[in-house]
Length: 519
Ligand code: ADP
Image 1: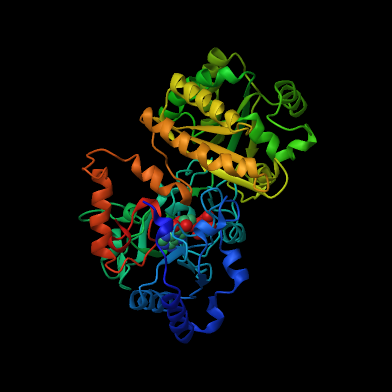
Image 2: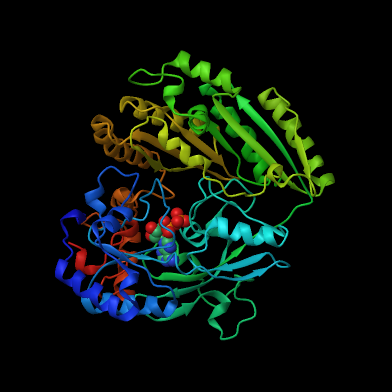
């Protein structure tokens, strides 16, 4: 889909912005040059390709409805964001240049925290820091799971199926019960919330009839205005242990050692094997170790590993629960890993009452953002995130081929393999300097190549950057018709057209285009 050729009509946008200003106030309309910059993809390579026309910022569901109705009247495409910190995947920027960002960061109410049942209900603008502060105020009865960079929105991250290294780290899977504005401005409540006065909206997914929560994740079928999320009850204690494997070739045994333990419930979260450049990038820019051009030389890499006391691959395992239970689990895990990895590192125990900073609770941080300074200049980063089977040989092969592609593009390899019970999410961070024209040219090609390589092995992406959404959608080719469109793409298209006849909501998100932009 050559969506970059689709032009959004400037007069329509101007008329739309005028209508919105009249309805919700001109201070809620941000359409100056600075605003357009602010809502662009700060990490991406081609700002113009995804530059918005501006942004509107409703403060309530009623104001949001005014925005949606005006968009239908003027046929102007919208791009809803919660806090717009989707770094590595497009930030606040739309797929379609000229779309108007709907910034929901002003909808900031925490509707509810049910301490007993472990649930929070949030509006899109509630950030991880906001929710953490509220839980801290209550003495941490529930613990968060947070992504590596926690600037963003709790709802926005869950809706994109973001991940965290905690037990409830599959954020999309913790969603229970949504309120959604459909593209026609009407509101629905999913799950048991379909009943007026439901007593179990955010407590049960045993809905009567089809379950629609996931239909609004990574889609453009509605704007989520309220989201229920399950949180972990505070554990009595935690136990934490670090493993390091010395060689690049160690990933296979690292993966094969972990996933059976995860599958049996002996490890409470998806542990990741993180390559050393990732860890080094949190410590400082590459110039700290190497001032030269080109790839980081192997001897410099070895020096970094010995200076930081880390391996080529590094993983932290955390155990959460009553001390007796986690000590017992740890013993089983440590024995298994001693046999397979030849090491038995000492664990660290944390108990309620100890310094909370050492608890391995999900404490929001922006430490991961340091990675964008790896090369200096205007740092950029892009995520390439395929899903593989939990299998050491396959993980090793995927790593080797990805590293070769990175190196051919002149970029230091940084990848993490997050080991689940049955599958691995392999998040590769493509770090680069946006001021370096060679890199800025190489990176989009690298993405396309990686996506194509992965598809050959039967691996799709769990999430992708706005610029690669069509490319990834095209890999969903089961049941392809003569035009090459797969069965899933056709189903998504049917739903899109039924729900959004004027094609106003996030055209092109996840490669789903409404009729007026197709063909
Ligand atoms: P975060 O700030 O947590 O990184 P964003 O606000 O950037 O999250 O949201 C990431 C993506 O999720 C957006 O680009 C958008 O496509 C989608 N999204 C976010 N919030 C909503 C929402 N309330 N309704 C529908 N889609 C949303």
